[in-house]
Length: 167
Image 1: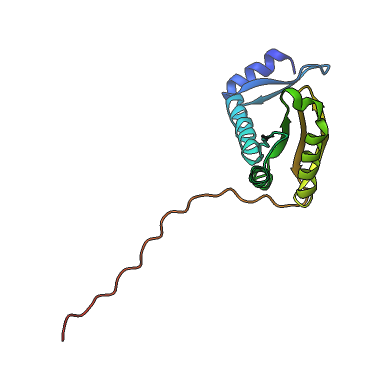
Image 2: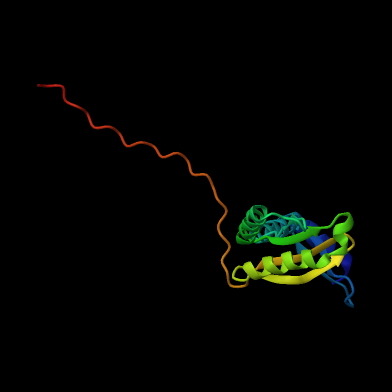
């Protein structure tokens, strides 16, 4: 029908004339409540956004002279980040003369990859960029991510039984 006639029909019903496909010949329009349509679309996008998981990239920095305890401590953090479903960027930071021995940093990253073999998969192999060497680890496919910890409300104590005072 002609646009003017469609517009009068839409106004008569208290609705809007919405252009659906402007490139079609002739253009396709629909009579609908446009405000309600926009609201429904916003609701759908909010629902979709609620169900998606945002993956963060956490970074853990090491030095070539890292001590064993520091290494184990940082490795535990990486395991926890992976269990939460995040990716981890393990970085070796070189200073000054340490740049002459990049194999030390590579050994640390390869040891880390080997020890996290059961829980992590390597997304990018160790590579050096400037004075840093890094690798990116992510959770192995098929592993369930641990649920986020939620502090439970304190339990209410059970009501005490009445004590008789007769002797």
